[in-house]
Length: 317
Length: 236
Image (tube, rainbow over all chains, first blue to last red; front, side, top):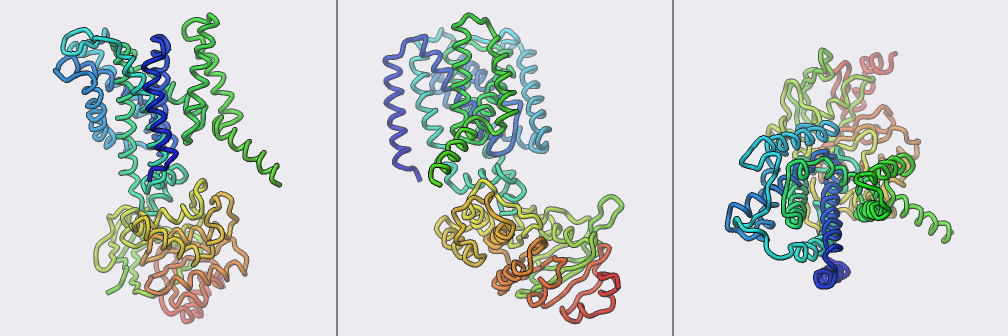
């Protein structure tokens, strides 16, 4: 069941979201949209890889599907953009079921690579299909008209509230029966099956939900950019970002990705402000993730909380 | 009708026959010790019963219903559970959560019923005091107890014990024996063990395997005293 503190968090999230829409200036709104949507994507990857043990190198496929789903459906039907954003994740979730039936035959590293291949296949298909805009991509033109207003003013409060709701939702989920099964799978998949858990079904549920969640975040993101190209939407940079945020922050923890995301955005913004151009910040990210994996392989947040616990242990003894 | 039976069950690994046409019938309330030299196929037979391995030939039935093709999780809900040789615990979960999982999924209990049942299981396996502890922090005896508790929590009618006494001291084995005795009523227990002391006084029947095949099967004392057993198992 949902706890009081979680209801408080949701209400606070709603209030902050409303304030952010009204008072944050446009430039910052774009940045914050990206922050919250990256958080949602990273948390989806974390649920799949960190909890369900299915490391995937192909989650950019769901970003691309979300982006293309948004543009194609908004441009070619009369459904308003905000309606499309709700429908697209449902469709992507349904699409991921037959995909799962195929890729679940692969395990561990084979699954990770298999997902990458699947993403690449979809990418190539989009590039080679003129009706989908080919390599040039498509512009978001709802009903054939230019997008009106400032979408980021809506996307920011929505993504901020969704991030808060996601944390609360995951906490509630992990306390449920299925959540306990997920935590058990994180520790020992074979033993979870020997306890009566239908692992295949659990994987399918999480695969579908995380695919849909990633597509939702992507649809929101591309509503603010107003156009989509296959190279951008199906780019491996998305899954690299998700992995960096989760692995550096702490795989299989709810707080870890917050830490990872803060580091990523902080370093990127500082370096860009200091005049380093383009992708130079990735050099620092690479060094940082190598360092973390070498010295604190469980990630920064678990290392920090273990350290605090050991201090407390010393203080109490 | 037998609670669980195997009919001519075989399992080949390439050209090696790990289990060779084994037929056994087990009735409710029966506890069977399963012994044999290393490589005799004891653990493979247990794996065939839990479904983690599929037999190359033969049939496994429960209450007369064919369960040969059921996957592991479905066999657990059907009532077959194993306590593994090396405890397979969920290290980041508490002892209580470890036992809750099979109560939810294996025994398919509701949240409330599972809570009551888990308390009972923890009491039965002498783990009640450690319920809140992380599984990773347990010592070997408690890990073995937890492995047993996990198997029991799924309310199995067929309980398979794979060397649950291995690596324990004599007093520890005695305490595990007490736990197993409490579990006997209404169940079939198949206990694989290298230590005869563990099986004595618990198992009424003894099954001896050698080179994948069933060698001897009968009342514990009779089989234990037989010359064939002495020569194959003890090398005498």
